[in-house]
Image 1: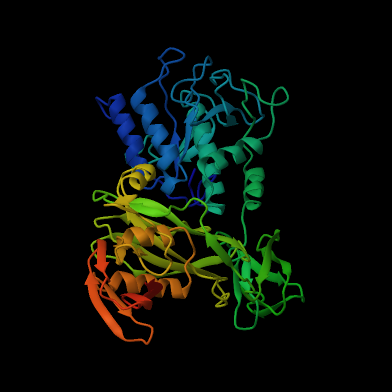
Image 2: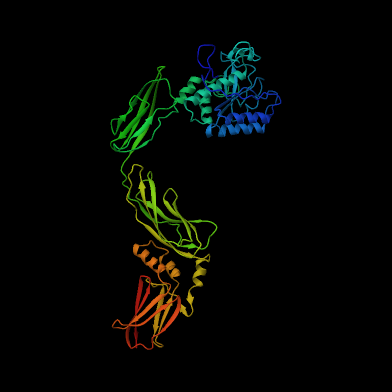
Length: 554
């Protein structure tokens, strides 16, 4: 199979291929040992496993789980996940195909003579895939192969002249599989099998039959089909302009090359360098696309042609727009200290090119350091927050996005989506509202847009009634369901970071302070019976936020 073409004895189907021998016929070999041998070959880099052996005395339908599992692993995990190609001789009993050639994951090979006639001994059936030339069995065949040198071999000479049976046809197919992989090593084992069966020379009745399978393996047709799977290596998209270039290379497995000619359209592309070499450098000087071709002439006179579609990436003119994510929440839940849950914050709505990369930028305006957040995007159009709450403190965060086209060109930043996330307990919103709608004798009114308070003056008892609300509950109700402006963020942070007490000042009509006090959260009554009659102004201050009201003492 792998003998070099050196004119001293014979020629191999896949000349100079590396061979790896595994002896499974030592005394006392078990089925488990055979499975281990298959596994060892795969683990040591075997691309094609040529198996000229079977269980000739086993009944039709015989299988072995250890060997089946080893074959399954070979075709699944061999060749770094592309799968090793496993080839088996069909057997020399003339009846049903022998195991393991019956395994659906292998290529099963029968034997024909040099005139295309099926040998009577060739086992056959629905499991047969291909046939290949061979000779008679019992070492009276006419296939020549290598032997151990001198007296160490089966014969005194260096060659075996009477090889035959499906044991000789199996390595022919294995050699063609090796040729295919030498041209395109990126093919999967299934793709190699398809090439071999699809290019086989049909024999017997038209199409597949149990005697010849898909036909006689055809090395030339398989190679030509494999050449069609090769591609020019390099990018399809290239940034526009003389500062950028695309680099294309011919298939690396081609050798014995006489000449190379790159054919590049004069518009919108041009060649920078590399004409006549294996590596072409080109650029786009204007927007558009092109098909670049290469003609490769081999020393044998064969001309191969490959082409590649390329297109330019122009300047980034995106104008992305984002909005509040439709599935977002108003408040976060405390406390989830054993894991994270996700919150959708914003979504990319319009003004972007889907082929460009997205760059999201987060700005955390306020968070409690004891709460844990991770800010990320889903790689598509949504910005998210992974939340682990340890406190009842709020979170204020904004995000914006721009597109990046990979050519050093980025769009302008989008609008900001800035959100205030309050914190609630695990109570339902209805339970939360009903348990907090009263404080003492005062109905809670959250309508004040400046400060967390509501107040009223009663003339009968000259009493100013002030309800200093819980600031976080007030913030939750006012800001949890809106996209925040810069002034909103400033007001919120001022309240959060302000003193815990509410400063109350009362002025008379002339602007003189006649009362000053600081109140804790809760319900308060300020006795104003000693005030003179007339208009008065109450001023409430929390952080930088101020609220004023007027009342008349009579």
